Length: 329
Picture 1 (tube, rainbow, N blue to C red):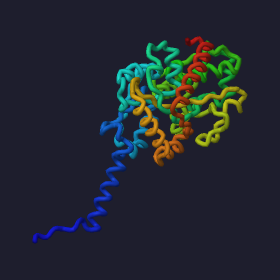
Picture 2 (cartoon, helix red, strand yellow; picture 1 turned 180 degrees about the vertical axis):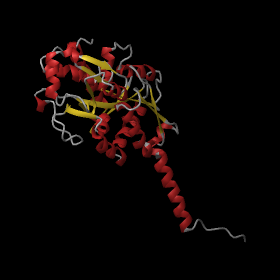
Picture 3 (cartoon, one colour; picture 1 turned 120 degrees about the horizontal axis):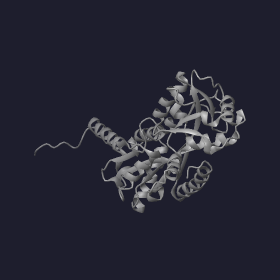
Picture 4 (cartoon, one colour; picture 1 turned 90 degrees about the vertical axis):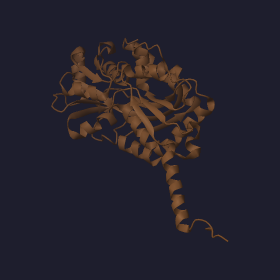
């Protein structure tokens, strides 16, 4: 009678179990990514590299690795995300395509009179909120928000602001600050850019008096001493910038938060929508994403389903009203 092995020994069995565990961890497992049928997720950042949407996309890429395997991130810059949006909706019915978006895109759609709106997408989840910081070059004579407000009262047009896309949160903040100091929001001298890196270059070149962007986008430059932060748009001082006073502390009665979320293309079926939402919620609970929130100074604001869709509708009404006051719509 021929000899046959009874089965794998304990060391072989342990090795096989380890391989199976690694495969599940790296590729997401059947339960996590089954609806993808082995396909790779592609995540559009509808802005130039370096900005908040790009940062969010790449942090998602890392946090999704254990849930869905490797995710591809690519950039489509321009017009506050509306160029990317117009390309994104062409992926109708494809659940492997996702796009990061947020308050900035809502403003850009309105101010640019975009032919494609967010109603052409399927909202999946709001992920984070972030606050804005107002900065000046390190050698600027402007030392505080009080100094900047004084200049705005004296000659609003002489104070130029460098920030993100037209109609975005940075321009909205500049208009609200102007209104709060008694100036006409429509007269704000705002220089729009497609990404945070370009706005920073304009500021450092001396072509702008002040710059405004998300705290997470400018924190490194602030701590390096290249630029000086003079105010944040939060209700209280932020842990990431504890020495920087709020606008309200400096008698400028303005508070404004940014937020970022994810949408899918139109036409995905209800089951794919549910599984994508579940995937994103699981991502927000991973250690990698929790570390991202702490490191970036982002605030968890997870919201999905009909509640997120209603939130977008409410934000659109609010933003449209502000932009009308600024003469941008």
